[in-house]
Image 1 (cartoon, rainbow, N blue to C red):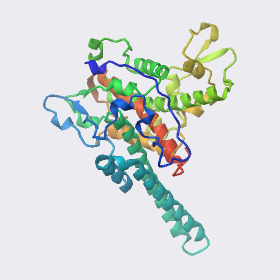
Image 2: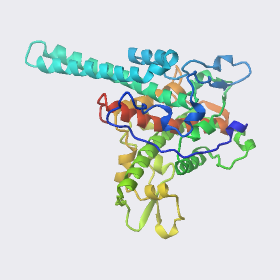
Image 3: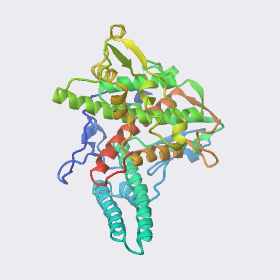
Image 4: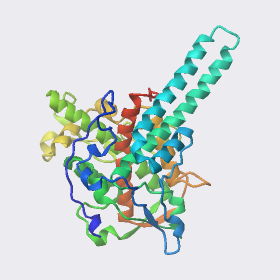
Length: 391
């Protein structure tokens, strides 16, 4: 159980430079982590073991251990590189992104040149198909970048839950709490712990017995919690970088609502403003409650980052929370459906009830928050080489 107890160190979360010289550390390298010396290794990370029952050996996973399989040739190529030639992964990512950008732009240029010819409709259709093909490939590239970040802290993504449930019982082991929590600054980590308490009811000071107590949860509700936690991680990364930027530039927070402050807790902070950002099945699972408002003299003294966030008005909040690209939006939906859905029905329509431990739920929530943070990084980096489609 010792590895479930957390010892935390702060680390600065960094945004990506506009260009990345080959001689400097890659933005997805372990230099971003204060614990890099502990986890630096060229060997493959240990496989995640998911225990559904004593007889469920099919829940032992190795290799890349991703619930979502790459659909494009670029994604499959990077998957092989990551497994067999890890030291070449960053170079391969950059090459693939440049190739995809060239192919898309070439198809668009041919469409423009043929706009007055008899083949205009043909080239327009070719350009549309090529854009869709490149969009799928870029999503795979972003997914591999996210997986690489997890592998640097020796954490594998939880595999498809449909293959890891036996007689309605789900258990995920090892918990990897320390690794998943060690990538955050302390004040960010405190907010994540509050998020965990709110969504699954597990307090930060819970005992080992409380952690391994069993509970029931519907698959549809688990899906909502997982996706909302991804969005929460994405929001926190965006807000933290803005906080750091305003501190360095000594910009006052001009988004305060007079003498009142918005108390941004989950679900308010996590879900507020997402109704118009998500489409399809994702939009059906989110609701937008009204934020709770407190007078400033009623609020206890918060941490610096939390005080900064409580000063956001709804417009500033949505700017930090909004997914910047359609590729990121599609990736969240595809990954979540692959993880939580099954072959017969999506997890949004499922009435199946899981019996699981609070420790397993915490593992899923921590993974989702980290996924959102890493997604922000991947989106920012990819957009410097391949222009993503604005959301």
